[in-house]
Structures are given as C-alpha cells and as structure tokens.
Amino acid sequence: MTRHADGTTSQPASPSGWWRRNRAWLLGALLLGVVAFARPYQDALKEYQRWRPHDPVDVAKGEWAEYAGARWRLVDASLKTATGPGSAFDLQRLDSSVLVLRYEVVPDPGTDPDKLDSCTGRVFDAQGREWENNPLPLSRYRNPQRLSDMCGSRLGEDFKRQHARPGQPFVFEHLYQLPRSKDWRRLQAGISVPDKALVKDQGSYLRFSLQ
Amino acid sequence: MSARKELSRALRNPWLRAAALLAVLAVMVTAMLGGFNKATATTGASQVHTYPAGAIVDSGAMRITALKAWRSLRGPEGNADPYTPVQYLVLQVRVDNRTGKSNSAYGNLQADLVWLSRKDGRLQEVKADRFQRADDHTLVDLLHPGMPTIVDMVWKLPIEAELPATSEWGVVRREFSPKATFFGASGWVQGRAAAKLALAVEDRRANVIAP
Amino acid sequence: MSVLDPIPLRRRRWWGWREWLLLLGALVLIVLLRKGQPDYDARVAPLLVHGHGLDRIEGRNFAIDVKGFKVAGAYLVAGDFSHPQPRQLKSSGVWLSVVGTLEALEKPGIISARLQTRDGLFYDTSGSGRPKLDGVNLTDRFVAPGLPESGAYFFELPPDKLQGAHLQVYWGNLTPGLMDSLVDIDLGIDAARARALLDEAEPVLDLRK
Image (cartoon, rainbow over all chains, first blue to last red; front, side, top):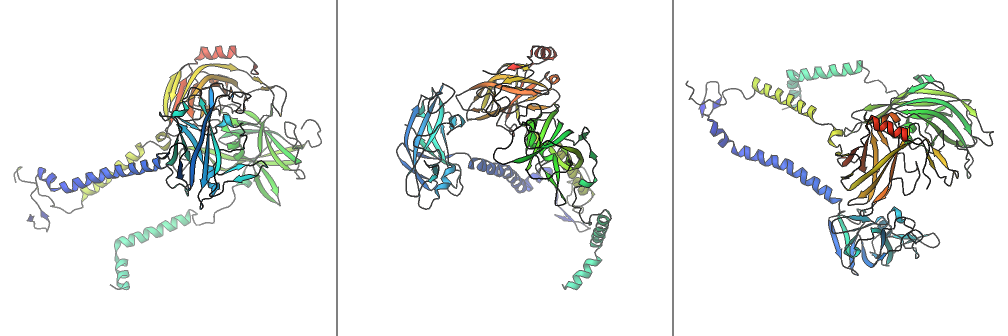
C-alpha cells in the first residue's frame, strides 16, 4: 500500500489479483442471486400446492378416518347400469353407468356440522383422470331415502332441513357418472372439505379405496 | 448538540435551502393549477347534450339509437306478472357493439344506458332490469360486434309510479384503456356522462291485447 | 512510467464523473428494459394450439373433433313452456353452426368456443338457450372424461365475416384462461367457400327433431 501526496492510498494492482481479492464478494453475490430466484419459486410452488390435493388420508374399505373435525367411513359402493331415460337417473346417454357411494360421517363434539355441507367428492383413476360427484346430468335423481350429497344436512320429508348432529352418524351419498367400460373397483374416491377452519392444510383430503 | 444549533446549521445548508425552495415552488404550482380546490361532486350530467329519438349517440363502446319508449302493464312479449302487478317502462334502442368482442347486455349496455328518474326532486340513475329482442322478444344475452340489434330495455316499476310525458335516459362514455386494471390488463373503462336521450313515453297501459 | 508498471487504484475520489456516467447508463438501461417488457396481456396470453379444417385437436384437458359447419338464415325451433308455438330464431346476420365432438381428457367441466374473424373481432356462442336444443347445443355442456359429447356450437355473425374465420375453443365458460391452452382452428373458409356457404344456406333451417 502506498500513500500519495493528496492523501489517497492505492495498492499495486494486477488483473488476476482482482478476482482473488474479491472472491468473497463474488461468491456472496452468486449465492444471493441463486437465492433470489430459488426462494420465490419455492414459495410460489408451495402456495400452488396448498390448494391442490396432495396430502391424502388413506382409508381402507369399512374403516373410519378422522378428517375435518369428524369421523368418516365408506359404507357401500355399487354400480348401477340401468341408467337410461325412464330410470331413476334418467340419463340421456346410454354408454354410461352410475357409481353410488354411500358414506357415514360422525361430527366431533366441537364441530359445527353445517360447515361440512361444503364437502366435495371425486373419484379418480390411476392415470389421474377425475370425475366430480353429482354432476349436472344426474341432477334429476331423487334418492328414495332422501339422502343428499351434502355431508352435513339434507332435506327431510316435510321439506325441512335435517342437520347432522355431533356424535351421531349421518349418511350421505355421492353419485358419479362413469363410462360404462370403466373398471370402477380400481378407482379411488376422495372427499374434501374446503373450510379452512376445519381443514388447515387445504391440500389434505380423504382417499377411500373401493376394493 | 442543541436543537437550536442543529436548526441554524440546517438553515445554512445550501442543499436544504434548495429543497425548501423546490417544495415552496411545488406548492405554488399545484395551487395555481387548481390542485387545492374543492373536488366537484357532479358527474357532469347537467352539462351534456340531449338527443331525441332517431339520433345516433356514440358512447365509445356502443353506438346507440333510441327508437321509441312506452309504458305498459305488460312486458314487450305481452305477459304481465301474475303475482305482483307492475308497470313496465320500455325503451327500444338499436345497439351497435363497438368493442370488438361479444358483450353481455347485462355488461356495458346495462351499465352505460340508465334511466334518469326524478325522485323527490333528485335525479337517480336506474339500470334496466331485463333486455329482450324486439323481433322475437327472447332475452338478449349477448350483443355481438358489428351486428346492430334492436333491444327492448325494460324497467319494472311499481304500478302506481307516476311518469312524466317525456322521460330522459343518460348515456355514459366507455373508452378502451390498455391498462385498465391494477395488474395492467386492458379493458373498456366507464368514463363520464356522454349524452342524454329525451323521448316521449307512449302510454300503452290501456292496451288489452298488445303491449 | 512504463506500460509494465501496475495501474494504481484509488488514485482519485470515490465518486467522480465516471460514476455519474455509470449511474446514468444504468438508469437508461433500466428504462429500456422496462419498456421492452411485455405488457400484462401478452404475459398471461393463452398458449395457442393451431389446427386446420375438419380435424381432432387437443388442448390442455380437452379435445375437439370438428365434423363440419353450415350456414343458415334463421332457425325454426320447437316452442317451450312460455311460448308453445314453434318460433323462428332470427339474427341481424347469419347463423353458423359448427358440428363436432368434445372430450374432457382429465377433469370434467365446460368447454367454450368463439369465432375470431380475419379483422380481429370475436363472436361468442349465442348462449345455451339460443337455440335451446338439449343434447345438441354444446354451449355450457358438461363434459366428463371418457364420455365425449357431440353436438354443435351456434354462432351469429355478419355474412361478410365468414371468410377467414377461425374457431377458437378453450376450457371454462368465461374467457380463455390465463396461460391456458387456446385451440385455434382455421376453418378454411376462403372467398369461394364463403360464397358457397351463403348460397347453400337455407333461409329457415328446421331444427325441430
């Protein structure tokens, strides 16, 4: 280091020395640059995943599972093939069948059963194709026992709403219109409750096997 | 150091002096440009030109020609409300959608062509309740670009409502803006009042068969 | 001093005219880069999948197989509850019906269509009630995987816009989703084809079954 007349200092410099002398800064800049891209990407990915089903609670047939402040069980799964015009399902197309899944839910003592009404159901196959419960073509079907597709209440005989009660089992049914050739036993059924108070991680859902 | 010393030091600082001068200049210029005046509450409805039936009014998003207006106890298709007796005020207009995309009648047309009703001496802007095609009286859902359509705009009013012999409607401008939303998406944005339409309201309440 | 002597650093003040120049250059660069950035509409624009004529094209989660198209002056449809007599659906332009089959590939939902004319105007389908033909009108038709839906999309457009019209098909029932796929099918209507379509068009096409 040499000191000059006007008070400034200087160091004898060489081009290769600059890289060596500043390697700490350069390394730091590189790391920060990587973090500046990687962190927001990870955050965005996590946010995207939060709303997509990615955390299944697997349930075997007949077993109970705890989810969304209640216990759930798949009671029955059956395929109905007489679904054409004139049948109870009154479907226009003749190349589909209706899968009927009957569930039982017992809300926990602290759960408001009406919050379960927002539940949605789907069935999916190994390739990831999905069908949603009670689609528009099945809207004309009326269950003889007045079972509803909502998980917390149904319309009773006197047109008054019957609510599920904590500690008491409540039965509901999800219907799916599937291609006739579909092997329904290899499907899996899912139930999600979009209420953030009951299900903190919105990516978690119940997954029932139908076999 | 003491506050007084700091202040005297600051006053002597040339940079701070320049900044203070700039601030004073900015306030003066703002005042001269009218920035401190009281904001006017009117939309300018009293300052627009009034057009009669048959004149073409350009609102930017649409070209509107008011054809006729009438009041009746039946809708344009001839039906009366069976449960509540109401009065219908109908304005028949030819609408030409100039936005380049199909637009719902409940979109630009409902928002930009309003009935100016006088209630307690104050002018109120009332949106139409429904829109029917003049030829077959079916409900208009979309107005397509470059295809002028004759639309019956219907206002449902209480049966005892009093209407003057001539009624007024307001047309609001709508301009295309390349940055219409916060994110920078483009769109057609409503602006100020563009014109007024004044038409004689034909009294068809005595008609028994045709509205 | 020879050229082999090392150049001394830090001979001058840390902020001089060179630094002002660098700052100005950086600001100019920032402004130019910002101006060169695509605007919001370009950034979220749908991904086009091009098709031509009568063909099966796949987008994300859907496929459309266009079988044909036809022009008519008006449609005669059956009456309904509020209007029992058969009625004519007229238009200030002509009616174009595009017949095809829709498939949902992964998830169920609604597939919508619109026409883009060669001068850049967009014509949506006229609504599921116009004409109201259950099982035929594809507007707002629910499609599930493994269960293809056949029918037609119905459009109203001015007769001079038939030439060069493109059929655009997309998932959902509003507008093409941001950055989602948008199938753009050139229907192959040149001037001669447009004239032929208009000549063959029936003034009133009976759509009653």
